[in-house]
Length: 273
Image 1: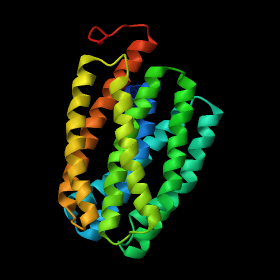
Image 2: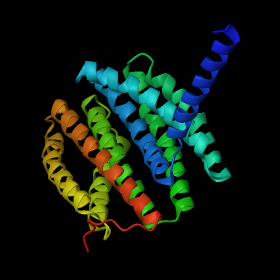
Image 3: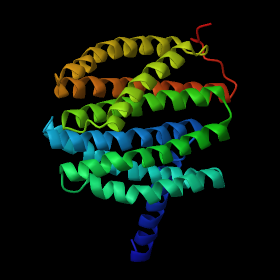
């Protein structure tokens, strides 16, 4: 076969594969909300794992999670930037990018109490910027089901924020602001769970999954209560909050599917009335 023909065939195959891959990565509003919500979680997951490294809690897993979370944040940021359906959302994403560079540098840098203090100081700003992207997407969608994707996705973030501030307390960061952030995150997680369980379009699968999360949340609170007595159980908190994260991630995907069904006029067969 002539060299030019071979080259043309290779190029054609490459373009075909690239086109399929590009098509597979096209986001829907539901998937964009899910990923934007996951960006919030990743900012807190990064902080949690950095603090876990400082405390030497599950070091191998913490290092692996930290590296993967940084990489995933950047990957999803590019996807959201390409998808952005309005100038408002694009502008919000630009604010995230401005804050991300410094946050990333601290996260992958030397583990020290000094740098941990900087991460704790800066995490609120990048979290707020990521949250604004979700709010902009939700407003653009204009659907109640989209709000549930946001709320369930936010529960993922709160599970990691709770763990992060628990680790911060265990490492000696016990200032009033850190303690208040920990208590607020717990209160917001409980309130978010109540909101999700009350949603009238929940499917049977969603309702059953939320009941499991509720039981897990009640168990986790027993570990948090020991904090007041100076009894730290970081390994237990690491395991339980990771479990909360995984369950809420699965539920967020269920709400994403529900949002697609409702937006297209389809009615889920297993919705409880």
